[in-house]
Length: 430
Image (cartoon, rainbow, N blue to C red; front, side):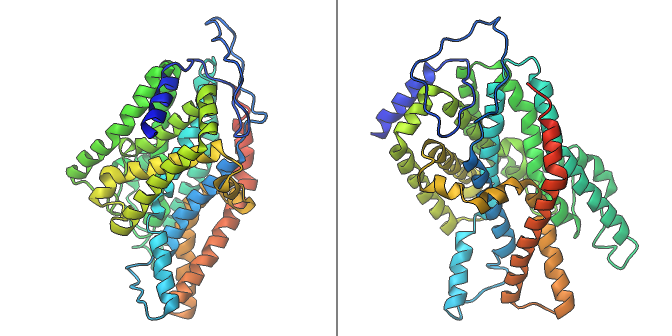
């Protein structure tokens, strides 16, 4: 059954039109008739944003950042060495198992980013302002908040350098250009006590910024068929590249390595996102996806079973199973979840993704991702200085409070900084 469906989809891909359709929401039906490809001299019509927003994607972003925060805040096992002294302790151990691969929320971000950015670029590929509009919009969305966060770190490090915390705030200022130019994922950095929680999460931003230099070129100049080939080739090459990077034996001072942080190592998730955009924007393939939700659900279930095995036997991101095929497996699982939400928004996953609190969290996920580790450590250390060493249950409560505090700060950032800048960026039209 699955072989027949695969052959059918492959045939649809092979005959799909080169010109992309206008943006479509998850609820739009595929057109009944195929439109003829426009002449090359046809004037470009900018894509309309009316009705193009898919609300479930905000919820998926909320799930992604929630996974990352849960992993960083509440996954103490084995460092805190929880023992099953009672049923509550045992229950928490089970909870820790459930978030053991919470770090893979970054992979969900990569898939979503590839889908959203890929969809925008596919819609605008004929625009005479293609590159100008894309990079202007990306600048206003990413750079200002990132540089504000860098500025706060530098100000804090300088202020602490005159206190008894000078050793903790130590920073090699020669690495400043590396941070500002999004090269930190290559390994030119060495983080101290303060810099590690403040700056180490930014490796994933570097991955995305580097991918943004490549993806617009691919989408602009490759035909649809060639783009499929390029994306699938990069997805298949990513595990091989990670094995090479792992063998290179390079690692950061904060224990992250090339197999985890280099852009080619994580290109599979971003390419799968663009692949999802290609599938969804083709009216025939979109119709097939909507009519075969059951097949997507079964495939997602198979990959979910594989995720369970990885959680049980090899949950750490630096292990050989995870860095060989595990990252790609996780990305494929999230790819299928995305397709399932798109094709069946009225289903269980779509309903979960529309939960208002998840959508609110997803809306501010960029700022939350940047600040959550610093906020968590600040709350925990502040309480420890006030009340003495914290017991495990108190640490959990402290991090729960930190999660609420980080969300509040992110909401403030969205209202005062990010939303006005996003609107400024959207003034650049394709």
